[in-house]
Image 1 (tube, rainbow, N blue to C red):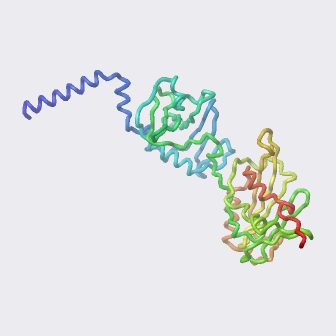
Image 2: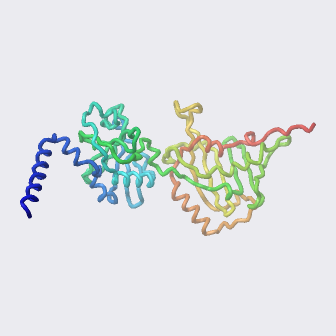
Image 3: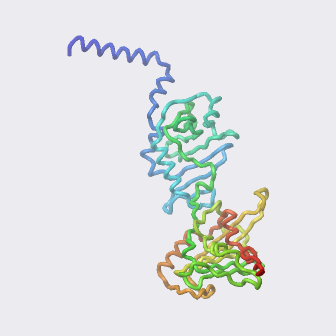
Length: 357
């Protein structure tokens, strides 16, 4: 190596030492974290995570998520199954998240970014904590950045906040952590609907053939007619894409006085739904929560529609078992409009026949 070349190397090395010496300690550390993963250890442990806890303002625990052989569940929802897609998206996103730039380490400014300690009663961020055995720091996710991509975050216990290269979905609503899908039966499959009210009124709509386009509403009094074919046909879509708002153990509710909704499909699937309106203080104009519980089975003479069906169909039996495995023992709070669709009376479906002129 020539002396000239060696001299240049020595000068560069000396310059680096001088720069490092002149840089304040905090700035040197800030430079080190840029473009680094927020939680580098999570990338290696992501598949082994088995416990998570989400908390928000005032230290309120939103959801404690636990993994077992049966999958992920939510402790605060009596162990109801969690939404794996929400969990997977969060963990994969968090494992890949990188620091774009350091932000304030002054606690007085944390609230501007939404990264103050969630123990504060007015905290706006949401915290995700891992099991102590993982050695992973809890993460507080704050506001989305304005005018650019990314989200502010801070590791719990750390002074420095940071801007991440992405926004992550960490819901502060417990229901968002639940597997919200209850059941999905397309209206095109349905051949009969029956509603039994607690006061004895019965509403029945059926097709005489699975190929019929419209349902026939039975028991229409003289001088009345269905409001429209759509009004009657819409009963068949009551269990289509039915999602929950909340869940509870079914035995925690008193089902005395419940109405019932029953649906029969062309392949012999029979689904029975109990409908219960529970008074709730201060929850909207009706002040009632709408709850249901379900049970699936095969075609029986109790709903003899006259439609050809195979009650011994193995595929239908397997489908009924799958539904029961999901819903047995559970009650579901559902949107009012879905509940009301299953709780129609004849008066809701008919109108007086206009006299001929």
